[in-house]
Image (cartoon, rainbow, N blue to C red; front, side, top):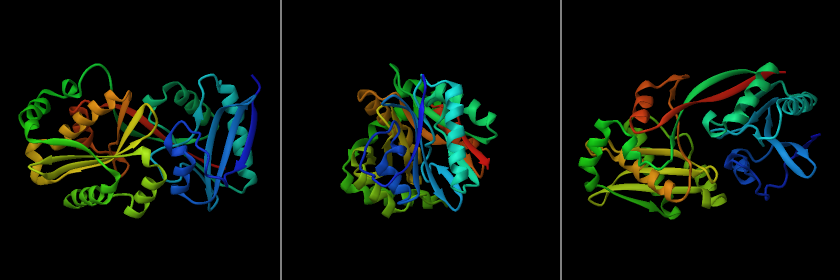
Length: 306
């Protein structure tokens, strides 16, 4: 299968084709309004591999500002074809005076075969890489409650009847965002995205932004902002609870309910994000995610100086 490689500047952000939301043109423009280039490898009329790079200050980034992005690769693309595609991209980036290439790939378990091929091709091309620990909950015939360690399961069973869970309308985005900001402030932390950018996201991709809350006696105790990554994956972008409700286990309850929603709607994974702090594994956070039923996987970031 002979592939045709192309590169085009992205100037029209109205089209909708992408496997992951982070490569959706509407999401691209929320990351950066300019500087996007789209590289494709096509077999006939079918695109079998593609990647978006944002070029700023001689650095090519994929994504520019998102949990991950990088290459979207169909299963039939061989390592040799991917190598040729990468060579085409790097040559073009050099011609554009790029001196550094950064790629943040999807967690390994979400795309195991394409990720393995890409890792081999990138490292053979001289890319250096760093690994983060990501936590995923696999959705199967079992409940999330059954996946939890006994201590978490028993605590949740005792407190669940005191809690209520519901999906919130997007009109409550500011309320949920401010609540989660307060939860972070209690812990000396801050949200990574400001409200203005979050609002732009909700207006551009309203069907991909989901809000959930947990309440106790009509008071919000926990909440989550969830992103629909694609038809298989939900990503818990932000979630948190107020410290005064620690004993009620509101986060395990929230995630258990979210798991049930995702299962009914046919999702395969709930992505709980990474467990990293200052480039090191955040052991308490990783332990918590494992205790509520998550499994760990690798998430790689690549760097090459041209």
